[in-house]
Image (cartoon, rainbow over all chains, first blue to last red; front, side, top):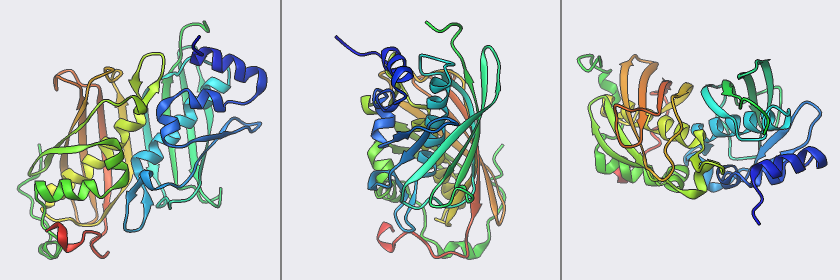
Length: 149
Length: 164
């Protein structure tokens, strides 16, 4: 008996705990993401770890991994917001790198800036110790499934 | 069209010179690149090509087995720096300031991802790179990207002399 991501999302909507949804997505687990509930939508935390380093001299987290955290947070937000029981397909992503990301806990939270029937426009921000000093921000478009089943 | 005729500031030659062997040695010292198993296949002037093998641990949608978009974002961001360094011929320190990726279609489950990046323009402070990703047929791309890097020639080289 296998638990599908659809079952995991349905269970999370009952319990409010989206970690099992995240853990069913191998790459999000690979990054070590932890989801924290928040009234405005899930906050994803990425612990600092050796394997996410992109610049071993500074050291700093790889820019692509910061992009992956932003995309993952947007995906979790869409599933949390009852827009999809499945992982939504990404259409495009633009990441602005604002500060070098040190190898410490990095947080991200998304908002849906416009929600259509087929497309969700998202804005996502990532920060470290101080939320007022984001390390990166992204805007992205996702394709939503036609119907929820 | 690449601006390969354009010369770069002569003082940048104080940074270690680029070679394919040195490039892959350097890549292997980046923990995230090693973790993803990315290899640079070729560098030629402003153009670089890399390959990322398909891996279950990198899947972003367990229902389809498609790798997470963030994996391709990382491969593209990394290769854009490689193309920039290859274009200049020296490892000038640089950081990504902007990256846009268009996901034309999902990466095919089970297949490696290839990326070609081309440095289109280098100025003293900024470089512009374009990239394309595909699985088996470059004429059937899965992603387009454009990337902007800031150059930091005033910084110390982050490359040790051993990389030659």
